[in-house]
Amino acid sequence: MPRLFTGLEIPAEIGASLMLLRGGLPGARWVEPGDFHITLRFIGDVDDRTAGEVTQMLAGISRRSFEVSLVGLDAFGGNKPRAVYVPVEAPPLLMELQAEHERLMQRIGLPAESRNYRPHVTLARLRDTSPRVVADYLATRGLYRSPPIRVGRFVLFSSRASVGGGPYVVEAAYPLL
Image (cartoon, rainbow, N blue to C red; front, side, top):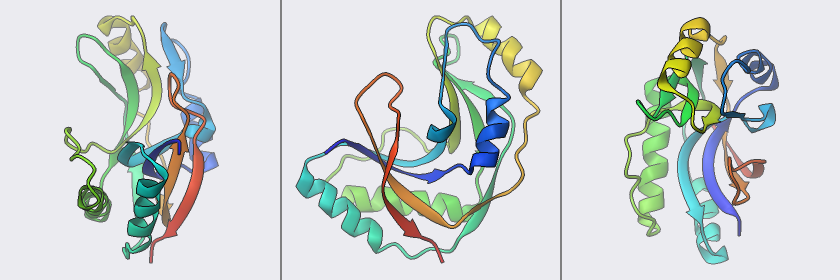
C-alpha cells in the first residue's frame, strides 16, 4: 500500500487564497492547491494488514466537529530553511483529535512521533534558499489570515513516494459529530 497519513482537508476557496502567497521565493517547490492539508499523524509505508488495522482504528473515533483558522506565515529549518508554512490556530478539539490518532497508531505498533505536533499547512518546500530571502518573504506576506474553516471530517490520505509527496489521494473519510 502507498505511504499513509491522516489529516484535514483544506477547502478549495481557502486553497485559492493560499495560492496568492506563491512566488518571490527562489528555490521553492510550491505545493499544488489540491494537496494543501493539515497533517494529523504521519503513518508511513505500511503493509496491507497494517493499513487495514489503521482504517479500522480510525473508524472507531467519535469526536465533535470544530473550526480552525490559518494565521500568518513561518518557516521550518532556522538557518537552513526547508519549508514555508501557514500555522493553524489550534483549538483544544484539534489537539485532542491529533492526540487520539497518535495513541491509536502506537496501539497498533507504529513508533511514536518524535516531534511535537505543530498544526500547519505547508506552502512550499525549500532547497538552497537563504534565511535572509525567507525572512524577506515572510515579512511581506506574513499577515495572512483565513476565515474560519469548519472541520466536519478527517481523512486517511495516501501519497506516492516522491519529492514533495503529492498528489495526495483520500483513501477513507471519517465524519466528526
